[in-house]
Image: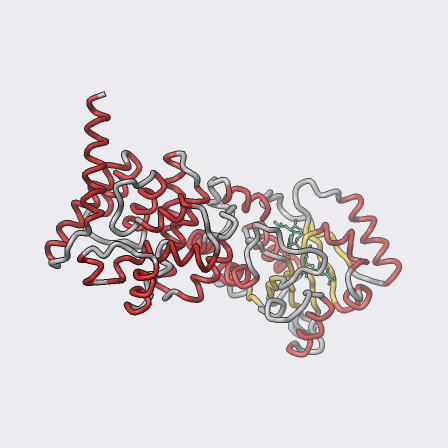
Length: 404
Ligand code: NAP
């Protein structure tokens, strides 16, 4: 009889995929070939049964999205949201029950996961029933104690008639933990996972140790800002972090301030007016003309009042990111520039600014002002008094430095 006549063979690739990497994809592809699978369905866990996803881990929606990006180029692969959309813990027994309703009765299921899972299979919910419904394939990785696994598999197969197999694959020493650590330490992850997944991680700022309130504000901004502004905020956060690392400033604070800098940018004029009044914000003529130009100062007060952020170095960086201030700190300059040069910014000479920002931060602030002046003159926009004071202060500091 041919494989076709026997009914379908479907691989179920279960794991957290936090993030998915070439190790997982290689296991799935080699299992597909070895067991003549018609397809492999990746099933990212929603809430893992025995643990919480690591504290630096990505949320379930992001893990699903990364998995989708990773498998989309392989017609033999697909991804299921069955566990991430189900409430409560992701027990495999429930997943099988739901999947079986969608698959032909004579489908042979192969549940593929890491070989380490074999040692604890008999702790799974209704494990005997699970192992009656699937052939369990545990993929090894470098350093796996295969003797202990073989013994455990033999025992399960013998006592309950399971079919637990150890799957020895090409040694590819890639792990999600290592990838998460690398990202946090700003080390390369290139060639460890597919490019679209790496790009997604970068754009979402995943797996980085953040300032304590980062996640809360990230959720707030995602819900309250327009998609374009939110994208800009994430990019500003990442650029600010890189600049902070370059200048030995606090990278977590820079990232956080970059993330939040435009929190009040989409306030309506009436709302802005309310905050200007309440916090006695200086009514420069350009603020009178356009109250929203004060969104940095408003944003700082809003963050303090609504989220209890009290760190003045962060609040000042947000406060002065639009028109600057004569007492701008290094962190403030970093956020000011990050806003101006993040990768989504496209205007003539932005690349010159990007280079200059890593050479001399004050020169970069001056360069940005010169670039702005052209625009301000063209659009007949006034320059805020604080901007003039900031420029004067930078020139004076530079002069002092040069004469020393
Ligand atoms: P995990 O934390 O993602 O993975 C544990 C180890 O196995 C890690 O070293 C991981 O490597 C590796 N791994 C994970 N998925 C893999 C795969 N498909 N192929 C090769 N290696 C893989 O996941 P887990 O907690 O062990 O869970 C694995 C699956 O078993 C999930 O589908 C989960 O829902 C299921 N499970 C069910 C129950 C239950 O029903 N009670 C209990 C436990 C687990 P990386 O870190 O590099 O990813």
